[in-house]
Length: 178
Image (cartoon, rainbow, N blue to C red; front, top):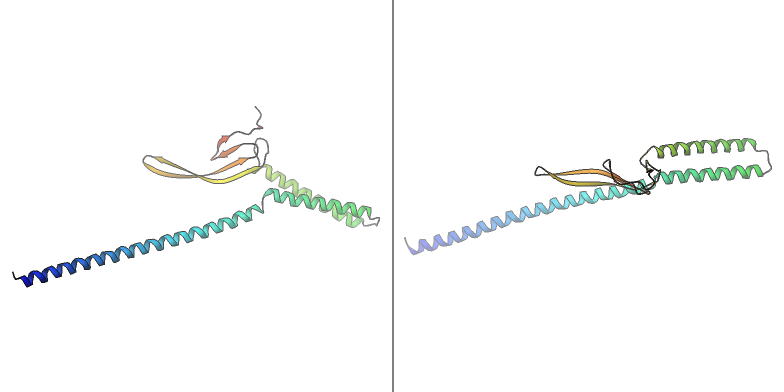
Protein backbone atom coordinates (compact mmCIF):
# COMPACT_ATOMS: atom_id res chain seq x y z
CA UNK A 1 0.00 0.00 0.00
CA UNK A 2 1.25 3.45 -0.74
CA UNK A 3 1.90 6.13 1.83
CA UNK A 4 -0.67 8.42 0.22
CA UNK A 5 -3.36 5.78 0.69
CA UNK A 6 -2.38 5.32 4.34
CA UNK A 7 -2.46 9.09 4.97
CA UNK A 8 -5.86 9.44 3.30
CA UNK A 9 -7.17 6.45 5.24
CA UNK A 10 -5.89 7.94 8.51
CA UNK A 11 -7.44 11.34 7.71
CA UNK A 12 -10.76 9.71 6.78
CA UNK A 13 -10.81 7.66 9.99
CA UNK A 14 -10.00 10.76 12.12
CA UNK A 15 -12.73 12.75 10.37
CA UNK A 16 -15.17 9.87 10.87
CA UNK A 17 -14.27 9.65 14.57
CA UNK A 18 -14.68 13.42 15.09
CA UNK A 19 -17.97 13.39 13.15
CA UNK A 20 -19.26 10.51 15.30
CA UNK A 21 -18.26 12.39 18.48
CA UNK A 22 -20.13 15.51 17.31
CA UNK A 23 -23.22 13.44 16.44
CA UNK A 24 -23.20 11.74 19.87
CA UNK A 25 -22.65 15.10 21.60
CA UNK A 26 -25.60 16.61 19.74
CA UNK A 27 -27.85 13.67 20.70
CA UNK A 28 -26.86 14.02 24.36
CA UNK A 29 -27.59 17.77 24.30
CA UNK A 30 -31.03 17.13 22.75
CA UNK A 31 -31.85 14.52 25.41
CA UNK A 32 -30.71 16.88 28.17
CA UNK A 33 -32.86 19.68 26.74
CA UNK A 34 -35.92 17.43 26.57
CA UNK A 35 -35.38 16.30 30.19
CA UNK A 36 -35.07 19.94 31.30
CA UNK A 37 -38.29 20.81 29.45
CA UNK A 38 -40.09 17.91 31.13
CA UNK A 39 -38.84 18.99 34.54
CA UNK A 40 -39.90 22.59 33.85
CA UNK A 41 -43.40 21.46 32.89
CA UNK A 42 -43.65 19.28 36.03
CA UNK A 43 -42.45 22.19 38.19
CA UNK A 44 -45.01 24.49 36.58
CA UNK A 45 -47.78 21.94 37.16
CA UNK A 46 -46.73 21.56 40.81
CA UNK A 47 -46.72 25.36 41.25
CA UNK A 48 -50.25 25.55 39.83
CA UNK A 49 -51.40 22.74 42.14
CA UNK A 50 -49.80 24.51 45.11
CA UNK A 51 -51.51 27.80 44.24
CA UNK A 52 -54.84 25.98 43.91
CA UNK A 53 -54.33 24.27 47.30
CA UNK A 54 -53.45 27.62 48.91
CA UNK A 55 -56.66 29.10 47.50
CA UNK A 56 -58.70 26.15 48.79
CA UNK A 57 -57.10 26.40 52.24
CA UNK A 58 -57.91 30.11 52.38
CA UNK A 59 -61.50 29.44 51.38
CA UNK A 60 -61.85 26.67 53.97
CA UNK A 61 -60.42 28.87 56.74
CA UNK A 62 -63.23 31.37 56.20
CA UNK A 63 -65.85 28.60 56.37
CA UNK A 64 -64.90 26.97 59.64
CA UNK A 65 -67.66 25.95 62.05
CA UNK A 66 -66.29 28.48 64.55
CA UNK A 67 -66.71 31.27 62.00
CA UNK A 68 -70.29 30.15 61.25
CA UNK A 69 -71.15 29.85 64.94
CA UNK A 70 -69.60 33.25 65.63
CA UNK A 71 -71.59 34.87 62.81
CA UNK A 72 -74.84 33.32 64.07
CA UNK A 73 -74.00 34.37 67.64
CA UNK A 74 -73.41 37.94 66.48
CA UNK A 75 -76.77 37.94 64.67
CA UNK A 76 -78.51 36.71 67.83
CA UNK A 77 -76.87 39.47 69.90
CA UNK A 78 -77.86 42.13 67.36
CA UNK A 79 -81.45 40.85 67.30
CA UNK A 80 -81.68 40.84 71.13
CA UNK A 81 -80.28 44.39 71.25
CA UNK A 82 -82.75 45.56 68.59
CA UNK A 83 -85.68 43.93 70.41
CA UNK A 84 -84.64 45.62 73.66
CA UNK A 85 -84.34 48.97 71.86
CA UNK A 86 -87.75 48.59 70.27
CA UNK A 87 -89.36 47.67 73.60
CA UNK A 88 -87.84 50.68 75.37
CA UNK A 89 -88.75 52.95 72.50
CA UNK A 90 -92.19 53.46 74.00
CA UNK A 91 -93.91 53.19 70.64
CA UNK A 92 -96.38 50.49 69.81
CA UNK A 93 -94.30 48.59 67.31
CA UNK A 94 -95.63 45.20 68.23
CA UNK A 95 -95.48 43.93 64.68
CA UNK A 96 -91.79 44.86 64.35
CA UNK A 97 -91.06 43.31 67.75
CA UNK A 98 -92.84 40.08 66.80
CA UNK A 99 -90.98 39.97 63.50
CA UNK A 100 -87.62 40.41 65.28
CA UNK A 101 -88.53 37.77 67.87
CA UNK A 102 -89.44 35.38 65.03
CA UNK A 103 -86.07 36.12 63.38
CA UNK A 104 -84.38 35.45 66.72
CA UNK A 105 -86.15 32.08 67.07
CA UNK A 106 -85.17 31.19 63.50
CA UNK A 107 -81.52 32.07 64.09
CA UNK A 108 -81.51 30.17 67.41
CA UNK A 109 -82.99 27.15 65.64
CA UNK A 110 -80.29 27.33 62.93
CA UNK A 111 -77.64 27.64 65.64
CA UNK A 112 -79.06 24.52 67.33
CA UNK A 113 -79.00 22.62 64.03
CA UNK A 114 -75.40 23.77 63.46
CA UNK A 115 -74.44 22.64 66.98
CA UNK A 116 -76.02 19.22 66.31
CA UNK A 117 -74.11 18.95 63.01
CA UNK A 118 -70.85 19.86 64.72
CA UNK A 119 -71.44 17.34 67.52
CA UNK A 120 -72.21 14.60 64.97
CA UNK A 121 -69.11 15.29 62.87
CA UNK A 122 -65.41 14.76 63.37
CA UNK A 123 -64.96 18.47 64.12
CA UNK A 124 -65.18 17.73 67.85
CA UNK A 125 -63.67 14.97 70.01
CA UNK A 126 -66.05 12.01 70.20
CA UNK A 127 -65.09 11.52 73.87
CA UNK A 128 -65.34 15.00 75.41
CA UNK A 129 -66.45 17.40 72.64
CA UNK A 130 -63.17 19.36 72.46
CA UNK A 131 -62.67 21.17 69.13
CA UNK A 132 -60.54 19.91 66.26
CA UNK A 133 -57.11 21.60 66.25
CA UNK A 134 -55.37 19.99 63.27
CA UNK A 135 -56.45 17.98 60.25
CA UNK A 136 -54.03 16.99 57.56
CA UNK A 137 -53.40 14.33 54.96
CA UNK A 138 -50.35 12.23 55.78
CA UNK A 139 -48.50 9.51 53.89
CA UNK A 140 -46.95 6.31 55.13
CA UNK A 141 -44.32 4.54 53.05
CA UNK A 142 -43.84 0.80 53.51
CA UNK A 143 -41.95 -1.96 51.81
CA UNK A 144 -43.88 -5.22 51.51
CA UNK A 145 -42.46 -8.16 49.62
CA UNK A 146 -39.74 -6.06 48.01
CA UNK A 147 -42.23 -3.48 46.67
CA UNK A 148 -42.67 0.07 47.92
CA UNK A 149 -46.20 1.12 48.86
CA UNK A 150 -47.52 4.60 49.65
CA UNK A 151 -50.55 4.80 51.93
CA UNK A 152 -52.38 8.10 52.52
CA UNK A 153 -54.53 8.71 55.57
CA UNK A 154 -56.20 11.59 57.37
CA UNK A 155 -54.66 12.65 60.70
CA UNK A 156 -56.82 14.54 63.24
CA UNK A 157 -55.69 16.10 66.53
CA UNK A 158 -58.13 17.56 69.04
CA UNK A 159 -57.58 20.17 71.76
CA UNK A 160 -57.96 17.53 74.49
CA UNK A 161 -54.96 15.56 73.22
CA UNK A 162 -56.79 12.87 71.24
CA UNK A 163 -54.90 12.08 68.02
CA UNK A 164 -56.46 9.77 65.44
CA UNK A 165 -55.20 8.68 62.05
CA UNK A 166 -56.33 5.93 59.73
CA UNK A 167 -58.84 4.81 62.40
CA UNK A 168 -55.86 4.26 64.74
CA UNK A 169 -55.55 6.20 67.99
CA UNK A 170 -52.08 7.72 68.47
CA UNK A 171 -52.77 9.48 71.80
CA UNK A 172 -55.83 9.29 74.09
CA UNK A 173 -58.31 11.97 75.13
CA UNK A 174 -57.20 13.56 78.40
CA UNK A 175 -60.82 13.84 79.55
CA UNK A 176 -61.71 10.21 78.84
CA UNK A 177 -63.51 8.54 81.72
CA UNK A 178 -61.28 5.87 83.24
